[in-house]
Image (cartoon, rainbow, N blue to C red; front, side):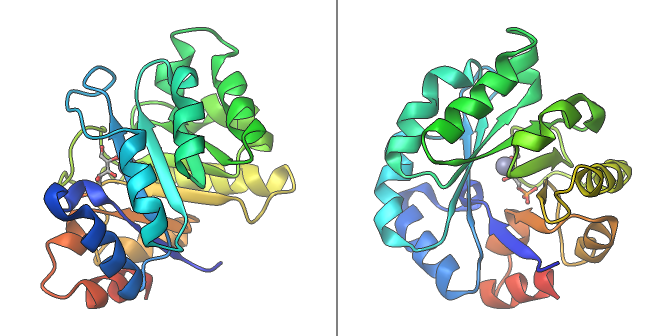
Length: 221
Ligand code: DX5
Ligand code: ZN
């Protein structure tokens, strides 16, 4: 499977995000990963739909919007209208509202013509989101606890990647995107990929590198 690199603008200088996005496209990124945090589901607050709207005209790359927020259903319209290409929502934010909330949110995303995905934290079994795999364009397996960039990769996620890929094959979606987010580096990209993931989010590994283009190509190869 073709590997895709999704640099996270969480690691960009927020006073120059537009420049960063244009630069990422030039340097070979495949998607732009946008980390939306609400100060409640996770501690920090980052940005909302206005950011997505403002960067939308600056790149042809898909905007991969990772919602780390409570009550995600209430926000889908804003992010879809702003130009998100894919929106992912956390199982943990949904299941505390109701057993059907995750499915309903994914359906709502799709009704806006936007791709959708479900996310699980490192301490949640991937089997919890198996029921929504048929609906998902992507599943995102967190390899750190969400909230901050620059954390250390939790290797236990690799078994979950294998289970997720096997399940995707089982339901006739062998090419479903499986994304890994957190602590991805040039050193662990290969084992992540061999486990069956094909979309790698990278914040610090790209933004802290002296040469962004080289960093992206290292992650790809
Ligand atoms: C963590 C975010 C990640 C983060 C990854 O809550 O979801 O996307 O930016 O950053 P690194 O690659 O530095 O771990
Ligand atoms: Zn993320």
